[in-house]
Length: 389
Image (tube, rainbow, N blue to C red):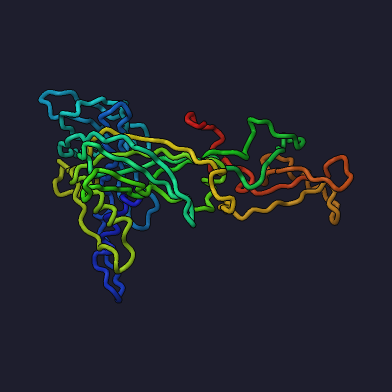
């Protein structure tokens, strides 16, 4: 969903595109600083999580998180309970399982730190059917993850999916030695920087509909494609897919958002159009707001994929160009003690393994490499997730 925060800037810059003659419009400042609301009211036992941010100009890299807001979930019951959704940091707000009455309607109220108030329409909860399975297909260019589901009552029809992914990977070279400030000593298990875990979240919009089918069945709907060269699948990969049932209006909103954020770039693609959600600014009715509130029972399913299940011809391409340097105790040409240069802390390199000349009982030096190629913690963590198996 990263692209959502750039939507108004993109619309402003593309609204007057021509087929042949380029045009550089003046982008209004109003295109930025629009409130973006992401998340759904989970009526079940899992957490309800919202993310609030502000759109930024085209020259900015990341959206601005909306901090210190006050969020509450309200029901249509007169004098009914109000549920707080508390700030957990970086623009995210969460509440533990709400266990809401699915026969009532609900809405979201937001009060921002600048004194403005935003309110969604009341929405009717949807009972999302369980995910039948999450699987994968081997494609010529990578690993295609898909989802299967169905509703025996034929009442869902409109679906959305997102996901979190976790993978175990390793650095290009194993570092088995480390400097203690005086000598090079073997690493302990606690000093491992070879095996790590990485994680990511969906950034694209994944939708599915059975509205034109006689039965409410979704078969092998694509979720994400992992390139065959990705280090995500060099050891072990896991993905947790979440499924949301949508109303027809919510589906239309997400479809329109997908067209505006992911299907632009050529003269054959859909042109940008206005995105209308169901969240409004009470303080200023003319102020645009990006977001659509839904309420549903969120379903999820996790799978694991082992590298042994994939083609042996798939080889990982590392994100860095990696080489090892030879560091001699006595350099054969300069006679310099290269190893001594590795001992002061902090070292500019990662020490990998010793090397020996033929017949030598002691190491004649050590290989070293860059941090990017010898330390997996630069882009991951050595802590294993609780769900890992």
